[in-house]
Image (cartoon, rainbow, N blue to C red; front, side, top):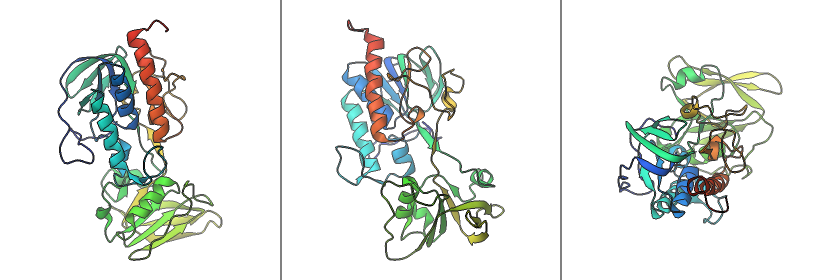
Length: 331
């Protein structure tokens, strides 16, 4: 659960979510309001566990934070091309119908004994489910972080395509996110150049459909961005042909990084949960971490970053939370 905003907003609607009651004690506390967290909270609520889910940025997580108008075609049971913000809103509605407390506060601390500090208020749960998702990974290009830290034309998400109107944009990456960015910027940016290190694109949808109309589109394969040009902001990039080793400079106004994600582990850095070599939380088949009554689901623990796997892990974690809290006869 990343984000610096103090409050979240209701996705897909003008009205805001009704404030959750300030109950400090719950059976289950869920950290993160993305697909994994909302689903886990809803399943816990349906098992009559008192549950609160915390989100300090925007409900829906990466779905609404990165590209709310993205079309999703691979989530079972939904119409093809459902918008990301529409799917996120359906998950919010699912949690509300289950009686879950939706707490629009950023979680600041998590303790091993089930205590959470959010918005200056302490909450306690018998089980904590970590579902604070992922954030964009850096590409490791020279001068990338320097310019990103100073609003110099480096981007990791495109919540508002109109911000790129008339600009020359470089997209780094060759997967689904990169191609989604390309499609969303067509007809808005004056030129879009997609740069990918491999010989082929990695999107499950295959080659993108290049629409006719305003804006030039180019795709460079087996090519890397060697460095970013410009002093205080992006003025261009130096491209390197990985087959020949030759370089060329290409003017640009913005560079969009789409090279994958990394787990949001800042919150549990000092918690003592075991991480793997990629910084993901290690969890067993029941989503249990090495700390009793702390579970982990979604992008922070799954090697497959898909909504369907996040929701599946959420169902497993909700079952385990029920076992931990109720200690049923069949345990």
